[in-house]
Length: 94
Image (cartoon, rainbow, N blue to C red; front, side, top):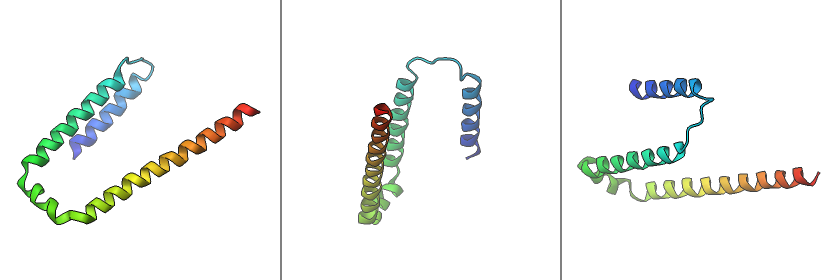
């Protein structure tokens, strides 16, 4: 846990020090690294029999919570998008 927090702090410090530099293609690199992390997480979950056997116990409750979280996030994003666009239209009309 302390290692993860240390990496976060180190990343923040390096980001602060290099904030004026322009990094090209950084979003593509970040996306690639996230995909790699997700793949490794899938390997770990798929290779752990305790987690796999526990999935059947979680069942419908986990599905409902997941769907509610996804739908709630999508609704919040949509409402925020509408609110931002409404403000932009009002700003341009003045």
